[in-house]
Length: 296
Image (spheres, rainbow, N blue to C red):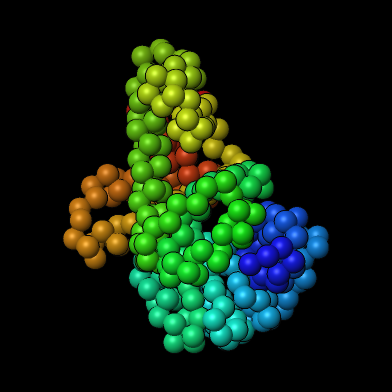
C-alpha cells in the first residue's frame, strides 16, 4: 500500500472526519461516505453510498457508532461488501461486539475479501493529532498491508490475534477505563466531603500512582473538576461499550460485577438527561449519592 492509493472511508463523525482528513494529508485518495452529507474533509471525494465509497479501493475503513450502524453499512443494501473488490480489505475501526466481528469476517470471506478489526484508543483530539493507538486483528497478511494506513492515523500498532479478539480487547480496555472513572468518582467524592481539594488530590495521585500518564491523569483531572462537557466520548457510547462487555462476559461465563455497577451508574446519569456529557459524567451519580451536587 502506497501514498496516492485509493481508500474508502465510511463514517465522518467526531472521530472519523479527522481520521479521513489525516489520510488525505498523507497523500491517499479518499472516497468518503457519511449518512449526513457535507462532512467530507477537504480533498476527499464525497460518495452517495458505502458501496460507492468502497468501489475501486483496496482498503475501506469504517468508523461508526455501534453494531447496528456497522452491520447496515457493511452488509445492507448499497453496503461495503457489494463494492469492495475481490481481495480487498475492510478495516473496521469502530468499537463493536466480538460476535459482529465474527459475522463480518465470515461475510467478507464468503465474498473473497478480508475483514480486519482495528479499534482505536484515543479521543477526537488524539484522532486529529494522529496519536491514536490501534489494535488490529485478522489475517496477518491483511493486517500487514494496512500498516501505511495505520501509520497515517496513529502512533502505535498493537496486533491482537483474530478480528473478534481485537474487538474484545477494545471492550476490555474501555471497561478498565470506566473502572478508573468509577474509582476516581468515588475517591474524589470522599476527599471533597472531608474538605480536601479534589484538584490538588488529582494532581498528587496522578504523579504518585500513575507517573503522570496522560490517560489516567486526563480523566482524574476532568472528574476532579467535574468537567463533563463537551463530550469527547459521550455517556451513551460508554453505556453501549459496557453493555457489549457484559454481553461478551455472559457468553464466556465471566462475572463482571464492577461492570454491572458501572452500567447502572451510566443509566442513572442518562436518566437525568445528561446525554451530551462525557462518559466521565458517570462520576456525577457517585457525587449525588454522597450528597454532593453533580458538578462543583
